Image 1 (spheres, rainbow, N blue to C red):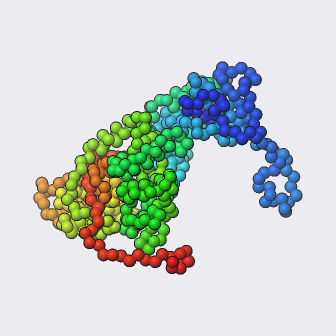
Image 2 (cartoon, rainbow, N blue to C red; image 1 turned 90 degrees about the horizontal axis):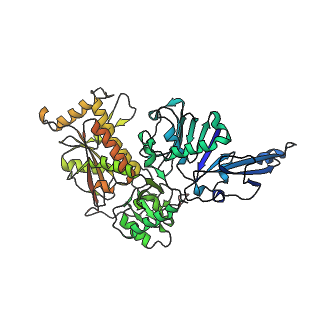
Image 3 (cartoon, rainbow, N blue to C red; image 1 turned 135 degrees about the vertical axis):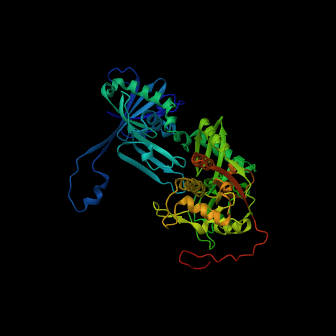
Length: 538
């Protein structure tokens, strides 16, 4: 017997709080006809329908007779251990007041019940401007490594797999949990045992050993009472700048050399900085973070992406009732204290250094900056030395800049969440290839030998003097402060994970800040005429 079970929040007081009914065809039976060892109600909704909704497509050409049908849904409302549950049948979930449901009940129960080698399916959603929702499944139970998911940047929404606990055979969890109940527990009279077991599994923390990513991303619904308080705190902090716990991260992904500008209702800049945001919201009227829209445009004022609320470009960390919440890509997430401590310990091992590189000019693209920095420092600009591996189809970037100290310097602006993810991946991929001595397509030997020979051609050091590689993540930003403080929360998570991968290979990891500044002199650039949809000038 498969049961679909929902759990309501602890603030719920009565059965009447659980439902959201329109009154049509509703029948509520308060007491079961036969005695049960727990308190429960049944809600049944039946709607009579003489013909299906698609009948109109056929009726003008076919004389068809439709038999009267009825669509039925039911909800069993149960109180066990002073917690309210709903077991839904048919479309019964639509009868519930969703604002009172525990949002992560099902996936927490499944994570505490499905063994890490018995996973059958995982559903996830990316945290991007256009979220990509995926559902992956395997024919036979497998491990998490069998699924292609970036657990640091994707929100895992569903988890399914086999169980062997003497009470259930399988589970699928999201907000609710669907359980395949076996044996005597498939009888309604034993439902209280099932619900007590599910509540115990929800309250357990054993899932952290195999599914720690569930604590990292726990979204807060817009109807949650905490949501409004978080939005107010965000606005307060933006109005009292400077504040270290708010930042900017563009949710859209553009090419590294794209000339992107941002238009906030007629005010255009190359970068979205907090002081600009501060000035806009002070004069933005009511609810400025949602009402003010940001439109990415190119040099000719052509739209590069759809307008998005200003808040979608912001990152924040807020403490509310001694709990930590973070804002990323327009969503608020709750983060467990243990998870924060784990991330901080990983970041504590990454030293920040000063590369003493020239400042990055505002509006200057990455390729031009790397070329200029390489000339100024007499370093190797690795843009000219991309390579292709035997087991890869695309070009591989060792790094952006290579110096005498054998530092693999990877450069990106603190601008787009996806760009930072690429930055941190670039360093760890290069370290793995260097360590593994991967073969090249061009026949010039393996990856490690090629990089060492390139370095030796510029700096002919003795073998005893040649240092071991260090991966340096160099982040360009207008903001002051350490790189660690300036990175959005999920970027810090990604950095900590990629750094662990690199150090496990025996190499060091460092971070560095590149100052972005307005050039001392910049020629005026005429603003092109804007064009309408058909190309007319106006």
